[in-house]
Image 1 (spheres, rainbow, N blue to C red):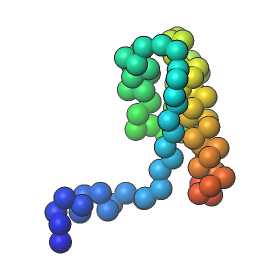
Image 2: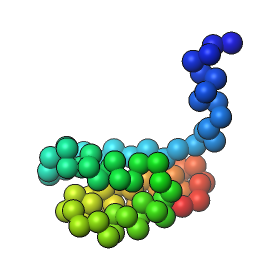
Image 3: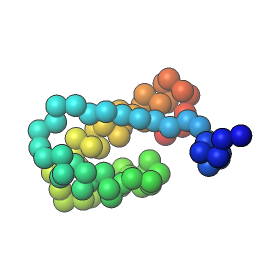
Image 4: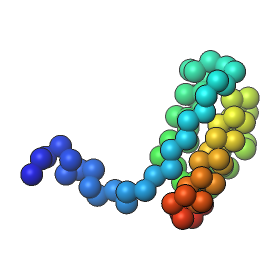
Length: 79
């Protein structure tokens, strides 16, 4: 009966996670892109990443697509 964990049990449970390492560029500029797509659906994130004018969107787009492919293969999730 821990109150700390009660809020998190409402989630669906499965979530795709990705780590992109050794990217060229400033972490702040990558965070600027990630702030825009955080909390959005996969399709919305793809549309935003394709049409945002920043050059840091391309590696983030690649990472998001890779995370979706991994989730589809490993956890049998839909894209």
